[in-house]
Image 1: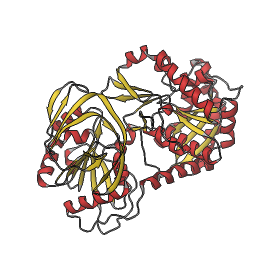
Image 2: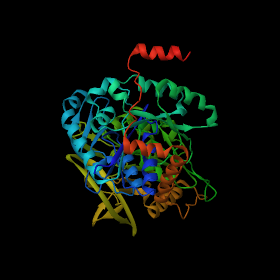
Image 3: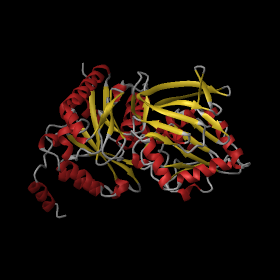
Image 4: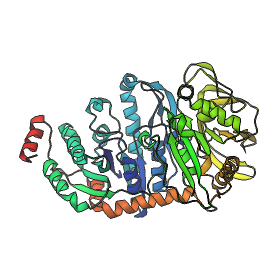
Length: 516
């Protein structure tokens, strides 16, 4: 028997597709359904390593957790990791298969379409329900011919579609109407209705607009989900990593002083979510920065991962941040480098793979040499640091060829990472979700920074914060979305009598009739 399925699309990137899918997955799992997430094609540099040895978008890993499942390449069979404005690394079923531009991708659409169709069919044969997430917007009709994740997927698998709009940005009613109106007749027939996300205030004030939206489109709004300040962890979209913004909602200090963290918003940042574990700690204020002046006064500066290490290192030099990092290292002020950021802090990088730049000088804050190899390291890892258990995952092409500094930790009898005074580096993502290790690290940062009044909280659990957010998502969906109607779509498909709005004249006529 084939399980039911639904596609959650969005008016825009960062409209809330990922969190709505996660909330639906957790809610349906709590109701006893076996549920799986699915995103046919993702474009993100925030990824995780799966148990089956591949990598997928971080949002699908979170959605899998919402379902009570381990992350799997089945949940995100095609992943694009942008390395420049024109090319992306193509990851199929968890493995990098080369770099592609827009035209290259067009030529591979049939091959990728068969991969996507096979994975979705397999999941539907195994699970009661599969909740699919779209990519970007289904209204990008210029890309419709190569679409694998929105209406192309919906047509291939006969999926009902709900469209999510972010009212916090404004113009949501026009976005929802326009998304339907611009599609062709066949695609419109699968759009069943809408969900509005991030609403603030009195929903009764929105009701007249929802009534008119239904009159114009013939489609209901299944729910209006309120804005919540408590939802911030695991932001996958690059739009969630904005310079000069705070990360999370820091609680008041456990001691008498705050600890301030400046995380550098690299142009090709990857796995930006690494710093969120630090932001979970009471009394730790984390901000994204992109200018050298913003680093002044920070107790800790973080250089995160990068999909284009050499290019982002050049960017650091061009805007003066590299000079600040060198001065900080010389002054014994804390710096943390993660993956690509770790590589930048070393003496040399030899890269004939990612950038083709050959040997490039690093910032010389660590006695480290790195050489890029064609084969990507993909591994879930465990180890210990000074007797404290740690875990994480690795996603990188660079291999350490020399490390003259003290190792940060040990894994399978091998050293990993570097410590030189207050400068720390590691290839491991997710390391700071190891709670005891994170507490020790922050205590050391406070010592190096002279923050004698900072005291790390004894009981912060990143895993518990993530679970609480998933449960909050499920609660919000249960309270504010018509779940019975959604289940009807999942099991029965879109209603057969949905009207179409396919021609420009038709749209103009509707607008005229509405007296707008």
